[in-house]
Length: 383
Image (tube, rainbow, N blue to C red):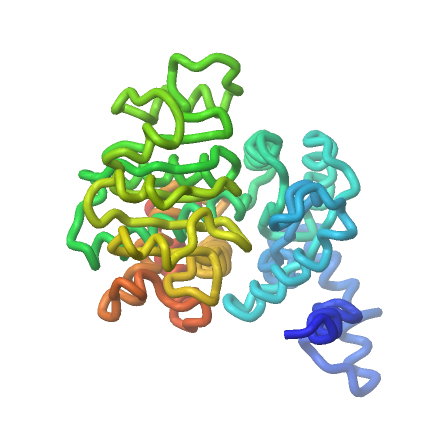
């Protein structure tokens, strides 16, 4: 595709607002606006819960970013992040039938963002945080979950984690292996890496070895921030020290979530026929054709290679399921249920080149939404 194709596809923006009921005569106008609308407003004043029935707010997702960690572009600011947030809204509508509105905020102060969304709370039913830099993203999500009585999820963290878990489940089904027996190396301790470590632990993975730019995260290391200090206590039960060489030796699974490149010789030191997820975009940590010389299953984040691990498999169905159930939050069990639902869609079609369904598979969002809604009921976060 050419630059003309790309810029032409964004000209004027990718979203518009359309009316759900036509106004073709005076009676329609009187119902949709004055004087009829006053009756609805008075009813909501007396019974605020009626807003869920008579406005779109209960089904509206706010897609929120401060533009500090946009795709692979970094801190490019709120305005430059807006085309990405518009695209996210298009995906919500296309894959889950959900309306959403991009909100890009010209501040990176966590408390200011929280205050802004608290004040806007009557206007939406859920918050999808997007492209907020680490470690601020962890604090922001925690504070919003505390302040808002609606589903909040940072997709760069949890959407990625859900799909990575689904892909690992699929790869293990193909290879006939058990996640409980595996040591997983995660390269990158940012938003996605931390969330992947946590969901894999919740799913019962044998051990996780986390790496940041300074090497293996372990309890004996100094200058760890609060998030990494917590990881040091819960990961690396093998007690490894050092860098990528020490981490990769004997590992069963590699998950790349950083821009670091991996020498193919390191793949030869892993356990026999390992699983390799090289997820950095646009350049994977190791080229998939190279990884395939050593690995039984290889995945990337790109659409031009087999096994694309794409967040669109998760977030549309997760939010629709949460909103369908009237959930107040998105729990760990809801995320685990989403991952299992993704795998189930392709369970009868799995192969080394197909460990998750296609991002364009229309069945995925429905299955994920159903599973997430049930998990919300089971976790008693409904109502």
